[in-house]
Image (cartoon, rainbow, N blue to C red; front, top):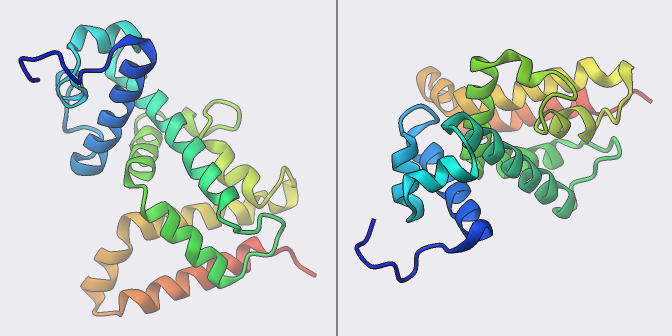
Length: 191
């Protein structure tokens, strides 16, 4: 933190926004487990006691950051022109993969949250479950399985795609294209 108070967040909304932004940046840089509340506070330019006052624990910060990131991701998907009415072409899915890849704090925190607390993935228990459960399945029980597999495939690509492509000598663009084609087939309802 700087010794001057100029430029520091003031008021509840500014502090909350700065803390969530700092947490998101730290997750993207270090992963969700490699920083503390003090690191978040320092990055946000606030006293660490304010983090506890406005959020509670680091887990509470992470949960709220994940919910905020999920809203940003869903808003970006809905605002991007990606159709959510069953028209999941490979190019649409590739755009979705790019959109998710551009938000590593979201998917890295989501993965960590599910690993730490599997109940976080249960419908109705976390705001993040709406991203894949409602995007193309739309509550259709018959499509829930294929939508789940598409979500698993997307997260697998985000986490392991570049590593697997490099380790096997495959062209990452070809692997990404194949992943998008498989996801599109899963997300498109049968005729």
